[in-house]
Length: 180
Image 1 (cartoon, helix red, strand yellow):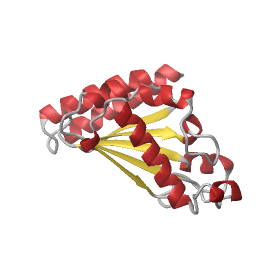
Image 2 (cartoon, one colour):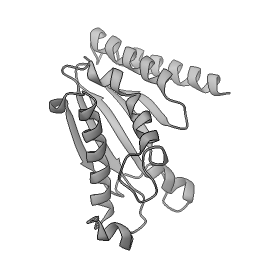
Image 3 (tube, one colour):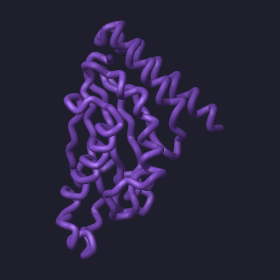
């Protein structure tokens, strides 16, 4: 089943890229497709969702993969997951790497407030900053990286269920630009 889903995702991405070929240069298309292929092989479906969009490649990392509930520090397993991005990102020369953080709508608790995290917006920003700091430490060019937190805005799913909240707690790494 897992191989079928990967094949379906790949086929869909190729079809989308074929349709967009008039909008995206062939070189950029080939570069993004190569990056997509490389990343697809690195991540399992329960770690990340990788999408080719018009002129962009978006990697959505699930919160539970990177951070403990309500946390914003990276542990060894989360660093290992993020390290899968390094071979792709360190080779980039002109492509912007945008790291966006999101949360669910659960209010910030007293433990986080004692650490200076006063809102979901601040928590999501701190998480995005921590990811950027790690990527920079691993050799990704700092001038290509940016981080932004969106808190509970732009939810990927409804916050009415535990599953929806889980989908909303995420980090998105988007590659935008020439593809190299």
